[in-house]
Image 1 (tube, helix red, strand yellow):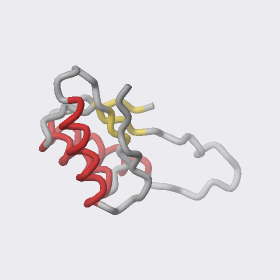
Image 2 (tube, helix red, strand yellow):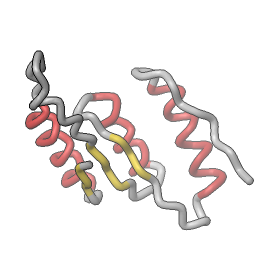
Image 3 (cartoon, one colour):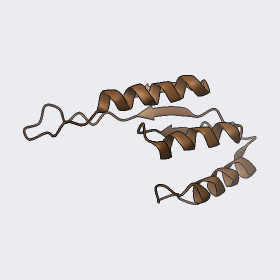
Image 4 (spheres, rainbow, N blue to C red):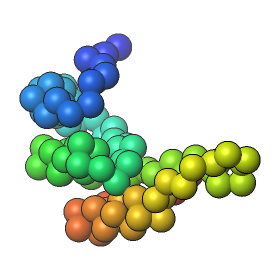
Length: 99
């Protein structure tokens, strides 16, 4: 069974790129579907770009936290994040799912 290095740091494009190259070299012909959890921020948007550049067709997921109905909730621009994430999906021709 193949394993891949785990990417735990945010903002480190170098390590991210290394792991994408590893995925491409080891799994490119196995028909594995790739998912990208995209927040609407720069780091996760770069992930989509690099996956496409490496030849993958990632499925983009956005997780809606759903805290709006909780007392003490501080507004977070989730609508803007969804808009940005759906734009990234359209730009790269990726399937987009909100969960």
